[in-house]
Length: 70
Image (cartoon, rainbow, N blue to C red):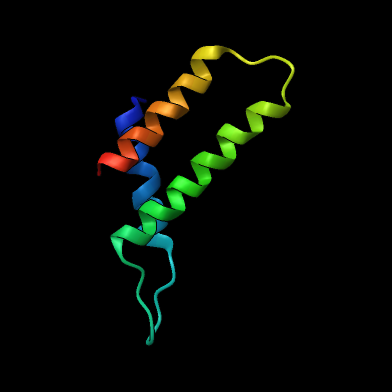
């Protein structure tokens, strides 16, 4: 899956499955914020690993950039 496809998937998943009730409905921007928090957590987890493929970290950085562009 490309970084752009993953970005869209994450944002849409958060947006579509977010809070939806009588008083509040999640907006697309909220889905983006949630996806960015998720990506930040993933990137932070690399600090605790002894080994990981560098291209994996780069992939998640690209996903983050794609989310920001949406």
